[in-house]
Image (cartoon, rainbow, N blue to C red; front, side):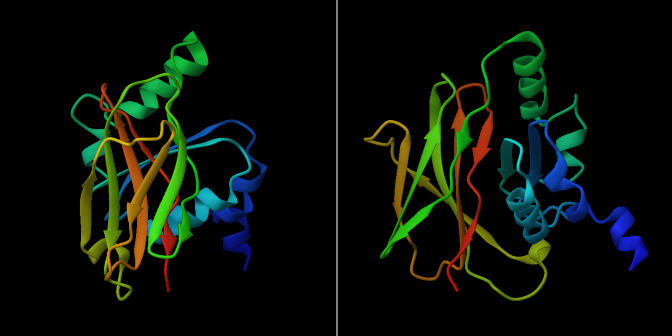
Length: 173
């Protein structure tokens, strides 16, 4: 279809060379979670992901220009300030998930596992659970037990400044 070839991002994202900063929410109507994950996977450029629990599209773009990750990225690339943390792809071993991350020289204050138990219906309506994880024993690595009912999961880390970095999500089914 001509419209898709002109406007569908899947035709453009793979050719982007500059780093991409994605800021969205688990239930964002404008950047639906499933499409967001597909976009992450298409990118060949460096990807910085910040997927906040229940942040809606307008939440991040009002009240002084949040989300702060966009400004931190601009300050990094234009002024040489500290970079953004990055979280890799989670690996599953039995009932355990492990992921590596780069803190970009920032102090991490919070580790979370986010998951939904639903595989039905629109992503915007799916309930998400946030499990706070203890401070991690191995620097640069997060591990968590997979909750029995979890279907789709991802990790978040949060810096002292409030910057969020997210892993890509994995679906167990």
